Length: 210
Image (tube, rainbow, N blue to C red):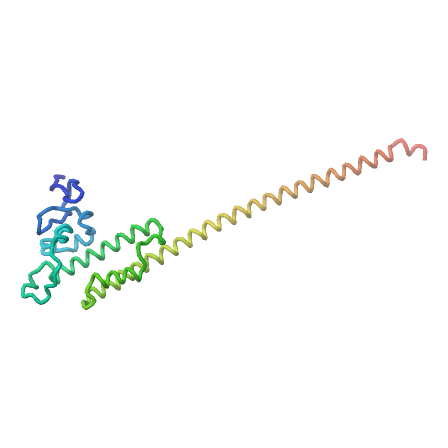
């Protein structure tokens, strides 16, 4: 497969059609450096891909409030762009949380559910139904992931505990058999000892004189 150029982020060759081109600097980025999941990339139409802006160009844009300006409908933060970036944010959050859950380290999550909710409240407009629905969806996904990981950890613990108790039970049964064998050997020795004592006290020839 022919190369379509290098990624401006990691400098690796882009060997497939799944990449983003910044509409501002015209540089290409693979999906990892663009922080866009494959699912989100496939769902984006040509118009949304055409207005995508890389992180470097976004950081260079001036921070200003242009809600009341007449050209607000033509800025990069139109409703379509905001919806696209919202999808990217949701995808990135899900990818990061699922990557950590695969390592079964629920305690190492970077933030609690409440902190993630506060973060979304600060980053997203609470007046938009799309953002409110997205926030609830993300929180439900996180709760489901954490619940699944806790259940998995509990099941693994139960399995390990069962194996340990089975092993101890087997060892106990084996020890019981060995003790019973030793008891039988001791009883046999005691019986033989008594027989020898009787023979020494009453030898066979002693009956001749009685």
